[in-house]
Amino acid sequence: MANKKQDKHLEGIEQATKDMLFGQSTANGGRYAYLNGGGAKFNEFIRNNENYPSFWKEGEILSEHGQAMATEMRDVEHAVIVGPGSAFAEKEFHVIKHLPNLKKVTFIDIAEKFNQAARQTMTDMKAELAAKNVSVTAITGPFQDIDKKVTDRWAKDYKKNLVMCVGSLITNIEKLAKDSYPETETQSALRDIFRLAANDGYAIIGYNALEKQSTLQKAYANAYLAEFMLNAWHFMLLNSPDIRIEDINGNPLDKNDRAVINDLFAYEMDDPKFDPQTRNYAHIIKAKKSFRVYAKDDSVQDGSFEEICKDIEAGFSFTMINSYQASTSIVNTQVNNLSKTSKFYEAKEMLARGKENIYLHSFRITPKAPAQP
Ligand SMILES: C[S@@+](CC[C@H](N)C(=O)[O-])C[C@H]1O[C@@H](n2cnc3c(N)ncnc32)[C@H](O)[C@@H]1O
Image (tube, rainbow, N blue to C red; front, side, top):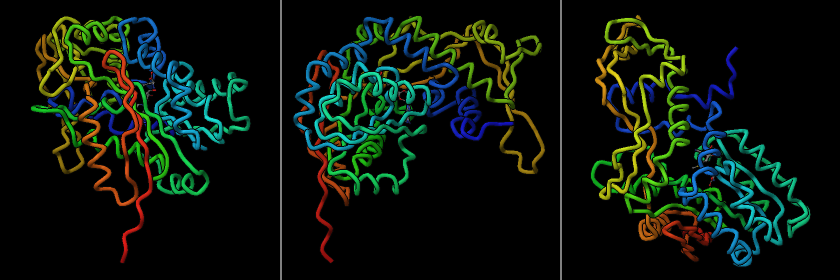
């Protein structure tokens, strides 16, 4: 029987797969990429690539400044870690461990394994915590879906909340921008993150602001990342029962077989892919051979099953995931806009700590006085 919890994580997967093959305006492979063992593959990538600055430089900034950050935010009682991934011990923990008044840590990740690993770090490193009675909990699911009841409870229970979202999660925006950086989407991601500070506390966001093609190429044109992307693409096809593939002679190909996927597709490593206009480094998958794809025709209204079909030429490509490169000024502009438009809080920059264009940007979030009738 289908597993309900797993099913929720797979919502929209067949549509996303179809969009990628039949023409797309989004790159939503990121939602599924950490499932199906993808988390372990991402972990291999970050640790085996000395040129991936988001892991190494963020880790350095947090280990060097974690204590200072905790001092700036010493009144925090509750920390919410969004998307801890496999790097919590090397990243956010450097701040968490020094918070003297910490009572609770909540992890939020779409991959349960990452939540478990982060909880384990809290147990293993208990002796290093400045605050002695810290309880730990985890929510498996997207941070965008956290219920207001939950944040209302945090607002009641804790004097100050800290939300941390590092590793450039806020810049994996799904919209494929055509002309300029997708500011609306960044603002919306920031709004979803800031909401978790329950109107009173702090936020720390970690992101890249890399603009040099060669630096980005070194970070991303990597065999471990290729394996992460192809594993994710295979998983998307596996979970798309109404999509089928034939070779150019009309022979069915088994898309569930990873060897078939490897034969048909490759993660693009050779062409430069950073677009300075949109500031996007697009992670592209390319067809190595021509083939034919069939999918369910959703325009048929009478409930019968009809198919649409497309011939895919060798060289056809689509975007799996976007890595937008933000900047401190883009983020500041969006945060100032949020402050103006929010009824509940004001967010003010505290400090942007940077190393080689990787930033840990911190903000203070204070409640707005309720509007007078
Ligand atoms: C780019 S990685 C960053 C991981 C880690 N913080 C680091 O710095 O290495 C993204 C992480 O966020 C998780 N994730 C992706 N989308 C998410 C979402 N909408 N809500 C919560 N977690 C998400 C993934 O499972 C993964 O652990």
